Image (cartoon, rainbow, N blue to C red; front, side, top):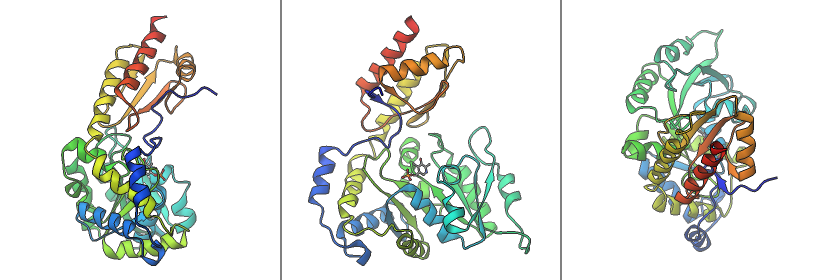
Length: 339
Ligand SMILES: *Cc1c(COP(=O)(O)O)cnc(C)c1O
């Protein structure tokens, strides 16, 4: 097992900074299941305020947050529409089906990452006893590090409104998108009834996500959170990290985006590497098949951590990736190609 020296695997690997730990240490706490934890209450109020929505709910993970959203929009036997590669369809262990009795209606992505508007419309079931009732459309933004444009989200919102459906945003990295676009997070998330945002990714908190949205949906989600075992007690210790992150770690996401660009530029100098132009903090690297295996092994040996195999790599920049990490990793990659 080689140790990872430059960790580009995910923005979930960040460790709470000294300042964040101090905030956690100082947090006032109470029993949040009784509604008594002032720090959790503050985080929920703050997130609802930032997004200009009615209510918010602090939850242990983005997976639970998405599941709660789907379970709030849908009843047993209902259906949600989402992209074929959406995290809440592919990467959440089928939770909506298993725990919510909710059926997915996945839709292929176009080259730009969006679902075609016509495909969404066509997938909405008519009111007929043969069909599951379509209840909600879920978008993901950023999607694989890409920012889906505002006018696309508005066009999907228009469909949802016309067809009487809910609209959910898996905004695990919504702040990356809002910083990238220079659009306020409230404006960015305005079209949605519910929004899930991760505190434990680029924002650098150790644990937690927040589901934000309409009061009735969040009330339902709170009940389901208890049912799923996500009712936490003195969770103000964790919420304090989230509050600290909102204050200190949002604007600096631009640094992660700049470092991803620098990585893309450096890696892209090697013709055997096909590198996507990163829009935010994620870049995709495709090594030529002639070197893929050797390159993977070299990266592992040199302690450059990425996700992916057979030369298909995902590099992610985050709070704990410094300019030195970026330059160090690039120098190591240069050395691979110098031989
Ligand atoms: C990470 C992630 C989630 C889920 O978050 P966890 O906290 O890991 O459960 C959901 N959606 C997207 C797009 C993510 O990247």
